[in-house]
Length: 542
Figure 1 (spheres, rainbow, N blue to C red):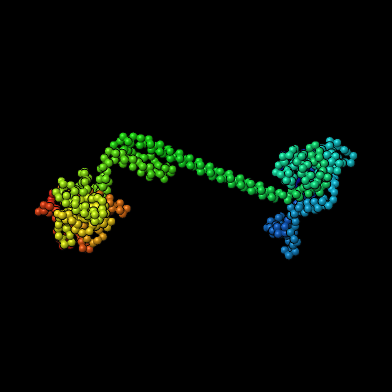
Figure 2 (cartoon, rainbow, N blue to C red; figure 1 turned 135 degrees about the vertical axis):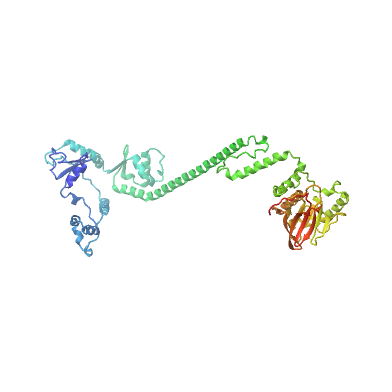
């Protein structure tokens, strides 16, 4: 069965031959022998006893496993498995262990003696004592190197090797040849190594090879080499790992450099596209405000807000260039007022020029000299520098008493003055104590200044022009400069206010019999009555 199976599997193999495959080959017995062609010649094998000679012993537990198989054929193949587990012997030696033990015994035997090598020459293939195949014998002598062995053995030198191979193998055992010998030829390097180790008496130098007499010298060289190999391996591992780390670091660095330049490329691409988009913005009426910006990318997102701020500042500068610089302060006030009153109040004086200190001018105040003198005295007391706003007002107090007064707003305080001698009625209200402003949505000039004192300042400006927006702009702008946040402004016809630490509702109503704005009390409400000529725009709380 074995030979039949091999014939089927190996019938096309050039190194396998049997009688079944070649019936004319009379050297092979039919159904018994087969031939394998080795590098050293043809070898004939017999199938009888072939498996026994070429099988390894198995562990007892594997034999028991096979014996307990439900397949009767498999079970019969392993009768040793029937033994009780208590009667089993120790596990058999593996093929590797047997080979190792054999090699250890061989080396031990060789080191204790001077070895002689016996080479067997096969005279013919027919096993005849009278046939001598010259060609076959020459082939064996040639591949076994017997002629060279005889010549070397005749001189007493068993081991031989080329200088270059010898130096490469043993150069690490000498400091003069490691890591590379640079003092001459390979023969000079080998001579230096041998002389340093004290083996010069046991070697001879040929033209291309070194010859070593005793195996002890070779063993000593191998032992010295084996002692140094682990350290060299560690060195090579260290160098290789260092190289891998350096290569990985260079790759990571290269990635960062590539990403950096790609990042810059994406930024430049966006800037170039944005430049094309806003190329004619300077000549447009709105300076490109309605132009769509290019789609942003990952590189431009961190600076996109800065770019838009830069564009907004440029656009604002282009708009401001057309406005005289001396008008910029009132423009800031109009922007502050417009932010809270635009679309909420019909008229807040945005079209007129804002002068601020109106009562210091003769066309607004016939007693402007007295006013200016009084303001100078107040400056000396409270140490302010300028008047931001001044106007005549009509006010009411907690007793529902109405009176004509003057309001003056400086950098830090709001003052109420009498309207004749312009003397301060009370100490000024700090702007930082203001909690909000309330105005109406109509053309009237009602203003409520809310504070944390429990008594809100309720008044209406007496002026031909609407100056509600100006006073709102002055207070909002100055409050932001002092506090750093925005002042709350409410636009409504019903205003909540505090009078004598009590919450009141200030209601704006149109009265036909009223010719000038006036205040009166109606239960818990304060009514601010205006003439029909001053219309009201209804709005919700803001």
